Length: 343
Image (cartoon, rainbow, N blue to C red; front, side):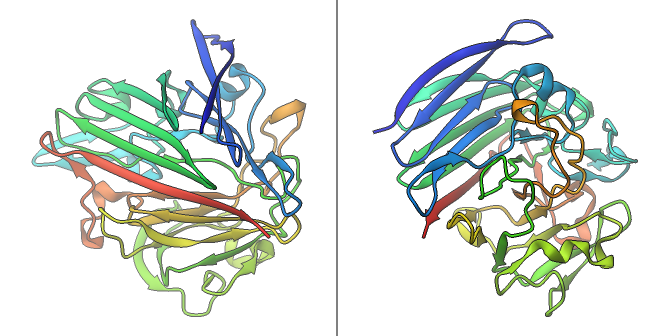
């Protein structure tokens, strides 16, 4: 049985209220905000059976709106980067909002992470919905989005459906920063990660894909679990740490195992399954100075993001077999399962 409890809402400095709800099935629990579809807290048990929060977050709407790290939010309309904020389809050219160097990152400066979603109750979780108007951050079409967070045993399911009345590329991801030692832990250094994928994108200095290569035993080969101390290697000097996208051989109707993030200290592990064609691993390389909970100033490499998504710069990467364009007669579907265990 999943228990649903409304919490005291926050005032939105832009006007209105931000709803907060907690859902709990006795094994795991989470707090969800109507702002940005944000997972503010996620409680899971450690090896001693003690539950604690394992995601980074903020104490107020003002703090969430002031930070640019997408803490716990849904990133969209197109997650990751779109080169020069430009794309075209069937003779129509579109200029998107550019908010990271020359790129449109995670949907622009007023992306889905800053929108007010409608939130309601399900028997096993919550359902959020959003309407993004035609031209929002430069994206074409009126886009309708449905987002479900559901709990089943030791699993969190995230499922998203989206449709649009004009052809538009859609890629939505959940951008939680995990620290399996507990959200107050200062580093991700002692985590280990195992990844099933054997291919990742070659990136240029702007974080855009230029090709695909095998991991082939290098620093980005996580076929055997290893730690994040590799982020200090000079190979990561341009990105400040790991910020790379791995390809999966997925069928959009099925969940494929991506890999497993673990904390030897707490005994917790997170195994990710998704129907998306790629997953970005981001080591919180630019988190330094952002304001977290309890007045904490967050640190570089304090969390780890695992972001299932369409491929980076997908609208422009036709040579990399990408077709993220959703037409009016199609429905975008993303489902990911986060399995939490402790030993």
